[in-house]
Amino acid sequence: MKAKPRASRRRAADHSHGARVPRYGTEALERAGRLFKSLGDSERLQILELLAAGESCVSEIAESTRAELSTVSQRLRLLRTEGLVHRRREGKHIFYSLSDRHVAGLIQNALEHISERTGE
Image 1: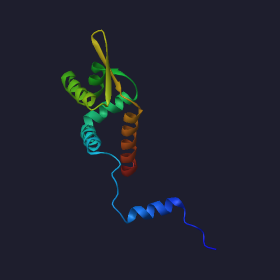
Image 2: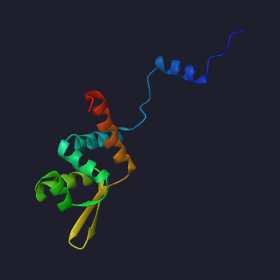
Image 3: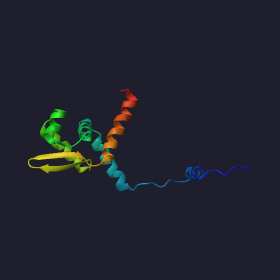
Image 4: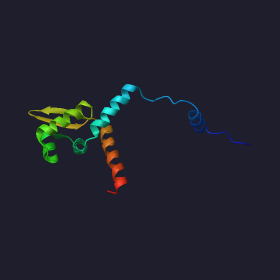
């Protein structure tokens, strides 16, 4: 007696013969494209990697990255616009942190992927 194919195999076979339905809409894909553009700069990635270790104020980020305060502020503004970082004010200081665990995962996965490929 011949075994029936498993449902997952049957579904996979069904998809190979017809058009696939996109999982996400155009707006979501455009927003993801903007997000990846904002991640496409090594200086902004450096800031995100620093923030993955915890909240920092702009002056601490500038010191760690050896960049001007105004440059760091511009980079943080773009990261904030794309929803990658949050800010909070405490007196004259503005502190930044990653917006959620997904951002930390994106950064970690990207760096691990590159490290595997380069052997670092």
